[in-house]
Length: 206
Image (cartoon, rainbow, N blue to C red):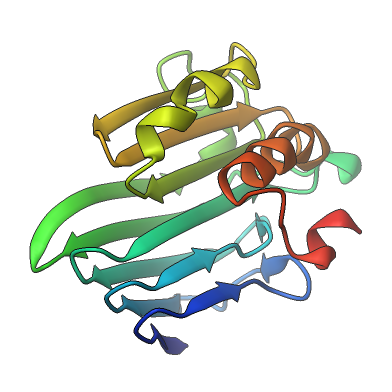
């Protein structure tokens, strides 16, 4: 699947999903491919706010997100992922998940992140240097001239399993780990409200 979106000059565009994305068990030797391309023109703000991607046992998903920004464009991006259905006790013993995010501004690299989990993902996640047993995670990136002013307020909302830092004065990055999607949202929703001036898509509140 491929999606290309452009936020035109001086516009504000918010993109979300009606429900959580689900990656079901894949057929042998088949991998789902998702490529999203976002363009943010001068003076525009794009809020990329999909709901959680839920990985099922046996799923195989390769996903790429590329953002091309003009110099004075702004971006709020969140990518939440849930590793199995916790309420059903599901474990991901055979799963493949590759996720790559790249943000370019005026043709220069501002941010890049890559995740590659293959095989017994649940076992990998139990490692203290990977996720410490977390069953859900989220990445948030804010590219905005006021990013630095939000850092202390964002950190005040975070548990011990999350961290926020500045890559530059106008680039704030956050990573959050949680035991499940419910706990993830309890932290993520206040953070997104703060970074998006109290406005988040209604579907996030269901």
